[in-house]
Length: 53
Image 1: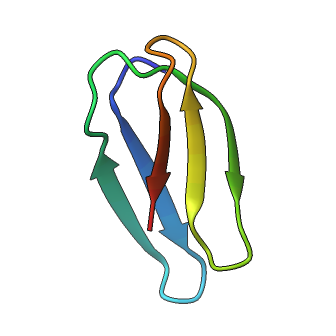
Image 2: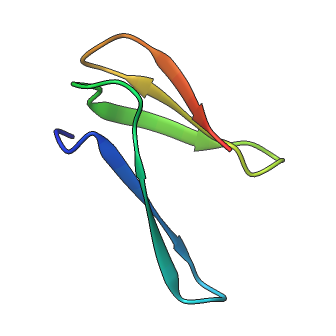
């Protein structure tokens, strides 16, 4: 919640990718992955909607 980054684990390649979020103090609580593989999240601390492609 306070790290300002998210990690994505690829189960096939067994690799971990750490992505820094563009905003400080984001506090992701809710997120969803759409049909195209985009990760949508709502920052509960800063009130911003974000996407990671």
